[in-house]
Amino acid sequence: MDIFGVLTLVGGLALFLFGMSVMGSGLEKLSGGRLERLLERLTSNPLKAVLLGAGVTAVIQSSSATTVMVVGFVNSGIMKLSQAIGIIMGANVGTTATSWILSLTGIEGESVWIRLLKPSSFSPVLAAVGIILYLSGKQGRKRDLGEIFLGFSVLMFGMETMSGAVKPLADVPEFTGILTMFQNPLLGVFVGAVLTAVIQSSSASVGILQALSVTGAFTYGSVIPIIMGQNIGTCVTAMLSAIGTSKSAKRAAFVHLYFNLIGSAVFMALYFGLDAVIGFEFSDQTAGAASIALIHSIFNLFTTFLLLPFIRGLEKMAYLTIPVSEEEKTSEEDLEFQILDDRFLKTPGFAIEQCRSLANKMAKLSKECFLMAIGSLEECSKERLEEVIALENRIDVYQDKLGNYLTKLSGSNLAYHDSQNVSTLLHCITDLERISDHAVNVAEAAREMNRRKLSFSKKAVEEMGIYGNAVEEILDRTVGAFTCGSEREALTVEPLEEVIDELNKEIKKRHIKRLRKGKCTIELGLLLSDIATSYERVADHCSNIAVCLIQEQDTELEAHSYVTHLKEENLSFERQVELLQAEYSLGKNKT
Image: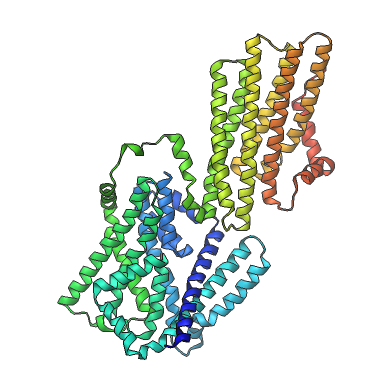
């Protein structure tokens, strides 16, 4: 092989690895976190967990990505170690799908149908379709699908290029002599492990092995140890991912290592032991791309079936390696933020779901905080005020943690719809935090009234009660729409916000009249004005959240134009306003 052949080989390898990366990225974006959510939820049964791990890995084409994700699940407390083991086993089985796809390069035959199965025949078609989808689909799933097709085509082209570059080496004795060194099982395991550890992908390293197999220098006896080593080497990714994590996450990484070490040791012992006694005829036969895919699958299926009954044993080994310590006893509040794990940033769809889960809790807490503040107007106490302040502080933490994580997430390579979701959550958590701030304002006004022994007139209490009920309903509607992602419920928020604006103006006007007639003091007037303003501001924040939710469905919508359109042209909006005005009527102005 001359210098140009070496350059072709290097270029083919680069295209192969790049194509695999692009295809995996596109598959993750297209899944939108749904596959990852399945991993999180459907792991109660070990066999189900294995099947699920295999299925998800076959789709996203990376056992390393699945395992790293599982380490993140365990680290954040989403998943127990016993649940994670089944998924790790399944991930090893699922990754064999890639080697079968790559084995198509070795198909030989003159039949039209056989030739159509060769990647060199269908990859150009996929590339053409992919580039059309990628360029025409400026946003959304069409672009993601185009990315997958392009990645697959580049992957296959790289594979063909590598195979073509190394094929002439079959006639070079020096090269075949180097490869026959891998007949030593220990050396084969070492080379396979190092190669996979360096490129951080067992699928890619198996693909490289399949490309080299066209030289005809690999036998079954030399390929088996290399494949064992490749499965051990892929554990490096999970081990690196576990650095700086909780002890539970480190145990999950060790389970992955033990699974592959034990499987490799037993498989090699059986194979070489039986070969020594019986003498397998195929051991010295040449192994092609399809044979390598078959060995890869047999090994992972064998290891899974061998160790599936011993999940508890693997768990105990992990606990023996990293014993339980007192430091692992973490408070519930600390645990809830562990789901914002940086490992999930590599799977944005799932990371967004974790953020949404916490944002839903934040929304409910904000509502609870404000309703508690409204209650303090009727029954004020030091304890109640402290509860409101404590809850507001907790909501501040939610905003801080979520805001930082979402900002990190926005810097990832996001699909368009994922980017929209991140933007919506960032806007909404700001409004939710402001609602809790207004809760503190109301509670402090109640404390001031209690300290000075002040009280509103009977009429003012009645009016503020009606006003408070309207605010409670708009909070119910907004939080309900936010937690359920309901556009229909979000559309009901703006009419009520319009009614609350009018209530705010009318209540302040009536109170001014009472002040003029001497039925109320200036101090009470100022306090009532502050409380009424806080109510109105809360309604404004509810309106902001509702508009954000609607904008998720209609990306062309602008907040101002939406509100203007509703008020000026929508008869349904006017009808809703009329009904709500009747429900929250202050009655005749009798001061």
